[in-house]
Figure 1 (cartoon, rainbow, N blue to C red):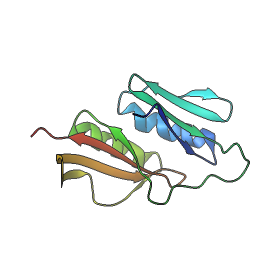
Figure 2 (cartoon, rainbow, N blue to C red; figure 1 turned 90 degrees about the vertical axis):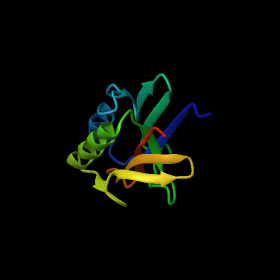
Figure 3 (cartoon, rainbow, N blue to C red; figure 1 turned 90 degrees about the horizontal axis):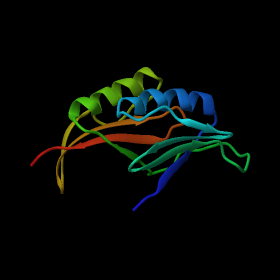
Figure 4 (cartoon, rainbow, N blue to C red; figure 1 turned 45 degrees about the horizontal axis):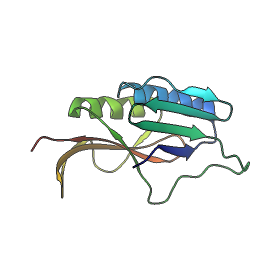
Length: 126
């Protein structure tokens, strides 16, 4: 359904360092830099971080969350640990299993350096 997701940042260098470490735990290569933007390109889509082109400060979405797919609970834990070590803030419950309408999910939530809410999720076998 989605071709890409783009979020804003006020410091592209810090955002790249943060997301390179974070997404590296999900086997995503470091970002490609394109002027005022960085791109993480995978077989399943593109995640990008950009300085706002209108010159205004970047702000996080109120109510928005960007979710990243993980292959295992261990990968979710590594993602969370890397994010915290890179300056992200752990939010909501600690990483762990949560029951959803579609079954059990292993989730972890962070705020990135610009306040964007991000999540790593692994769908548990039924």
